[in-house]
Image 1: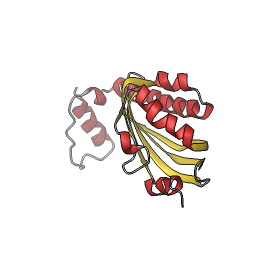
Image 2 (image 1 turned 120 degrees about the vertical axis):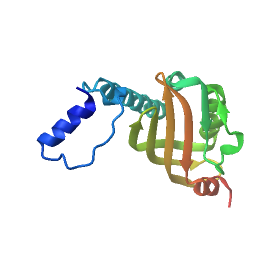
Image 3 (image 1 turned 135 degrees about the horizontal axis):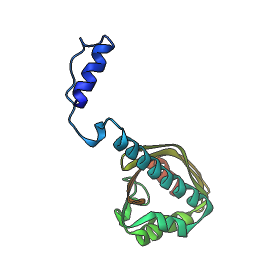
Length: 176
């Protein structure tokens, strides 16, 4: 008996046979055992855990863990028009550490990136949260929303895209 036949029999037994039939291809995601679905859920949970570990490492200043999570070929893109977009794309951990993390560390006091929500879907993880810190040159406080989109493969972050309030960032780094 095919999955379609099983589905139709279940609909008929439930008195829902009048609903239009839905064509279902025989793909791993529609296996009766749910093994493929369980594997996908596990992969998403693993990807989410990698991103959570990244944020914990940021908070602890643990560069070794951060470097270990980033793929050697990572492509990191800062938000357009932001103060660190000038060198986009950053390719490889060394470029990210020097061009982004290094400059943030030199220009901000008490800088934090705090995720409020982390959502995983397939090989992507999206984090929604807030940046905070005091710009050393201007003394102005940053409190900006962010959305981070991570792409993962093999337990490593292979791509990053930042979305944030770039107007606020530029305002805070620009002397009055």
